[in-house]
Image (tube, rainbow over the protein chains, first blue to last red):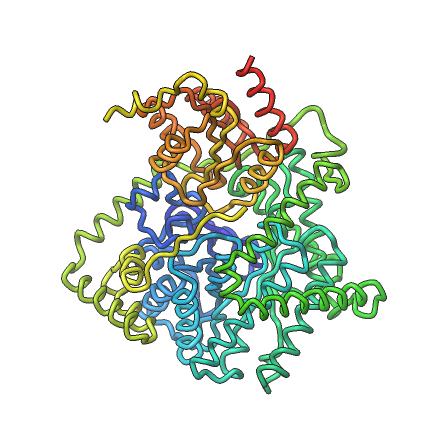
Length: 474
Length: 148
């Protein structure tokens, strides 16, 4: 049970973490605000109005320190949803862990660190695809050696699905991304059985229950086969596809929002029947704002009822052997394999990003889905059927606009108090390591201790890698 | 150079302008599923749609509207920053003399924020759950109305 949380300053999010742990949650999952996800500091003019809004604002190691204050990181595992600046945030986290006297070898957690799906769907990329992937591999390489219990990438289909993809597209594009990371890690000279066990996955839990279960099952088969046969993995842990699931945010409706509780419960059931290792259940109010404490509690309770009352967690793969689920699983496998061939033929995942293949496929599916809804061929309760004439507004979470000023003030204080000469030296070291193709983690960890900010570290990398721009596809 | 003078539409141009819509993601959020679906629906309904892509600042969105000589601006925001970013766009449109451009906002806009957006000059807000058909119909009837 791992509910995604984050808003405002690090201190505020830390309070929500303590609240969730007190309510029986077993792991933490961190949401960062948009400026942080885009590798910008809170005082960047482009960050105006967005600081601390969709997640927690992190500028320096001091924010990371406050974020996990009072939490025993040897006991509680921590997940961080961040991609373009993943390597920078992880460096801050490891530097802080060192300052706190923690043993890196005992840290457990996950950094999403999946840049490829950002290009397909989620749109929070900074550098061009190639250097972006290099940073992902730097994290894999570093953690394999020094932070062995850390999940180095959470290869994500979630956002691909949210952007409008079908189940098979989610499955195929996610695994294709996974294969790309494996191949790049092998090119780096890493041993498959050393890094592969720490790759994890993140899938969507959408409405069609049996199709979702089949999707997870197909993913496990396809991954295990590729790892064993194509990449020669011998360790059974390398074959295993472990995944986190989140219920589909895009299925939540603003109309009759209480009905979302029921949708979420069925989607969560699909994820559990499909064998997810961890789960996030969305809150009923998320079409309108971040969840209130009440809505967040109900979402967590939904999982607790599933886990402790229904008995569905007692069996592994309980739908295995069902003629329908088995047939669906085989069908999804076949269709995913067709996509693998197409991607290979066009020259691989990076070629598909450059020529807009993934984005076009996803946009087509999104439009087709919307037309189904508009034509009422697909029924959505409360939206195109069973409509209530009167809407009962629900309570929503309001954020204090003072958060932005507070965060900017804090950053200014840190920038004024630190040794700026030392900061310059660290930024030069980052640029040098980037140019020479060295693993960037050591330079970033050292820079973190000198209070180099996220925006500064990312700018130093952009000086070498450039920033990625592309024409819109729709 | 007077931008105000530059952007006063000469007579006759107006008719084209009315059916030209700039759709824009303002701010940092990358949620572009909705805007891309709306762009296609409006294009299929015969509108001329310009979608300049992600991460536009209020300044750059206004620049695009001026350059494209559009009659409409549709802004999509799913980050919750609408009460900061939308008023800023409208202020810049006014400063540039683009008061004839009508602004529509879509995204995760809570009902209680709608009055504030309308008060600062937004023509219409399409919150979560808006039907594509309603959006298209809105533009169609507004354009017919303006033409008459």
